[in-house]
Image (cartoon, rainbow, N blue to C red; front, side):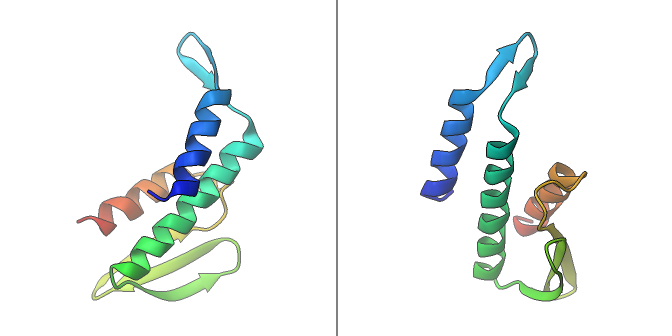
Length: 94
């Protein structure tokens, strides 16, 4: 992880309010952290030889390596953001 990502995650954790088994964090800061995660994933994809083959402005980008491809959600408010990011990470480190 990069320093900005670590710093953002620590700041967000510091602001979390825990109530029972729930944690609440400021929405804007969560979205900023998600954007940093997206940027880091894209940086890693390119570093590992993946190429961007499709890009829909501010929505999704498709990266390809050989016969494999991954869809990277560019919008941190995307409904399935966590699921999509998990799929990208699994494919990246496969």
